Amino acid sequence: MSSDHTSARIEPWGDGDLPLLERLLADPAMMAHLGGPESPERIAKRQAEYRQLGSRQYRIVDTDTGEGAGWVGYWHREWQGGEVFEIGWSVAPECQGRGLARAGAALVIALARAEHEPRFLHAYPSVDNGPSNAICRRLGFELAGPVDLEYPPGTVMRCNDWRLDLAAAAAG
Image 1 (spheres, rainbow, N blue to C red):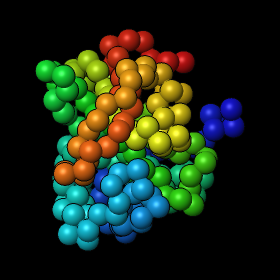
Image 2: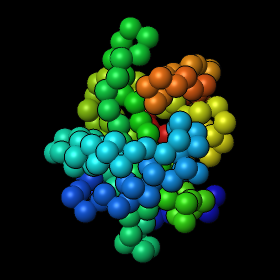
Image 3: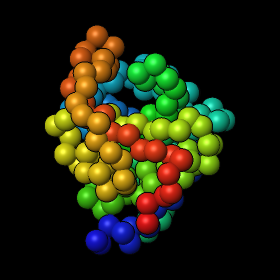
Image 4: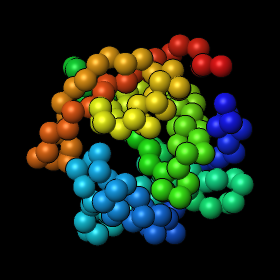
């Protein structure tokens, strides 16, 4: 696959990344599968949270251009009576289709795997989000099936529950 040759790196989210976050979260098309665009206040709050040391939130950098192309991150969440990691990502429209989200997610999976627990990493893309579901499949996640999740608060989303066993050997 040509996307296997995509050159991306991740960097901890920083002070100067607010414009990228605004491009990702304030755009109605980008947020179509996530309940619509976020308010400037919510985006500013996310920026403050993401830039904190140890947030596990990263800027995806297209190494061909050196530009920030998107965001990828992971965090703890309770799921079905236990603790898991959840992963999410977003790549700016002009950078999509080049494998940057998959490359960034693969780098973050390696970081989550190195933490040794929790054992499982989940992704919950909308059932209608074909590209994100394809990324999960290509990265070796197993589809557990559709679930209803509340996101944003007050809105129920139909999502696919994809699970990756972090204790298993990394996919080739």
